[in-house]
Image (cartoon, rainbow, N blue to C red; front, side):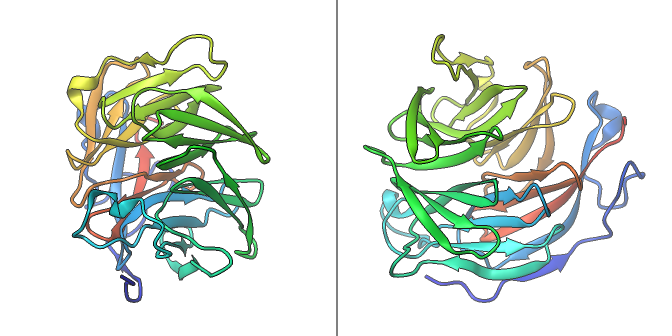
Length: 306
């Protein structure tokens, strides 16, 4: 299933800095101790089962993974070697650069592409049992990294030195050092990965929980103790003040978890299954793929208490 051209719909003027929220502001900062609010800016439609949005740290371009799977079919249709996957590229703020910036080719196939991250001019993309690599500058395919016994590579993240990918079926996290792969013990059914001051944070889809994971493999993953608050955790990021932001596909919301790892509030309710979102901290944008709506929503993310 190939989708048609990708459209971008503006949804209001963008905010900058710490300006007062406009009429599209969604969260009420007066009821939030952290002060974070979002305002819808743009919606990008006609995507094809978008799973992840990753921001290039240099120029702020946004890359979106498209699984491009049919709505109906077997449960594994989102993790199949079908040559249907592609990557969309946007300018900072959501303007389209290329609907299919990188697509599946005979010599460089892309299948059920999911998690993305960017490190040193290369984009890493999780694809079933291997990690695709492409040059940010040219889009040219580089040698992929095959991971032995991998089944469902899901998210990708970097600490600035290495790339880490989660496998939701084998309950592992793999650290990539060039072509070398090292396994790290993970919680059950790991999905999104983020980093906070050198600490790895992982969300579990099956356990509905957030964990701190020891990258030295000395102590087991430590849960936050919030499993009763969520139903389908996908993405996770850490904001500048230590606040965590997570996406819950089943609850159709993005939620904030305080730096105390206990307090929770909804940042914004959405429709269409928010998946693995990306944050551009420098420009204040939040990019949220809506996996069931074949769209991506761009929000302006602002802290009114700064």
